[in-house]
Image 1 (cartoon, helix red, strand yellow):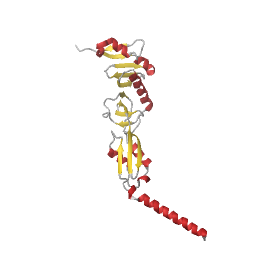
Image 2 (tube, one colour):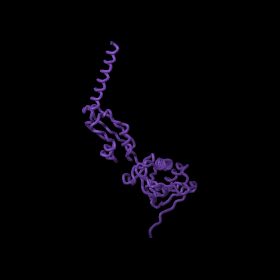
Image 3 (cartoon, rainbow, N blue to C red):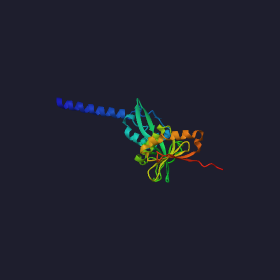
Image 4 (tube, rainbow, N blue to C red):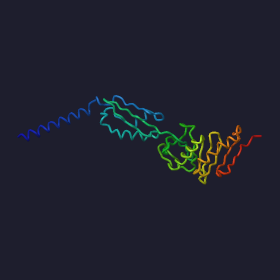
Length: 239
């Protein structure tokens, strides 16, 4: 009898706990009172809320937070998302957007990409002054797709090397032999050729321009493919 009373008591406790859990889970006090979004610049708050799909009639402590974060991460501009539950019933969605690093230009279109090669836009209107990279052979891309990361990394490494020498590339490309060609912001084209010794070649540009003094505008092309004998081509003057 004592054992039976004990099990009955345990059963009653379990039923009471299950009922209490059900009441807590369905208590309107834990339904979201507010859902706020931060960190957006290129994506809209409405898009984030739509992707997150936080139900207004469900306990915020029972929602699948990871699934909601992944849905927001699927937006092309979003690099990562963190959803925070705040007592008693508030939700905060913190978005970190991707940072564009280059505008890829190819026969198939123009694509704004971040350092991981992710296409954030199928145009470059959002970053008109970013470095342009000529990429002749590229299939049509869509927002969210990823281009050849190894090729992009090579470009970005070369751009960083030039910027370390106070040179600002406006456009970069590889010729058919794999040599680097760069157009600087001053509209001077530099043919570097093999980029394995790019730092040494970049150091030759400033002395060449200093030799021209106020006539740097006359410089159209600097050919450094044979760094021991740089060649300068001047602009043709209109007569």
